[in-house]
Length: 153
Image (cartoon, rainbow, N blue to C red; front, top):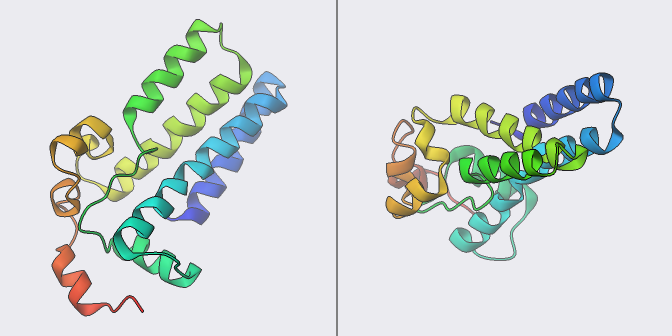
């Protein structure tokens, strides 16, 4: 899912959390986690296409899925599970709960928008698949086709 949609959704969910729980910490943590989880795309674009890169090139690479391998270290159900456990163990501390909601919302949106397989957003499953983009996101066009037809300069 594209950044503007994640931003709009995160703002909306954060506003609802604030209205219900009256916690700026929870709302802000949800907003930050829901948007900034995508920072891991910078790591993958840099690893795959080199540094430095331009903003326009970054968005083109991400939007067209121009990857042979994709790690997405922050995009994992495992982080949602761990943040949920942390929230529960800390008696639902507002900022930890906000992170839990923000990460979970982001991954649900990505899973239903970008993939035909919920496992695509499991770090362990991607690792077992060698982080190969075409295997993980088999519903998308071949990476070889995208690389061949779209220059990255």
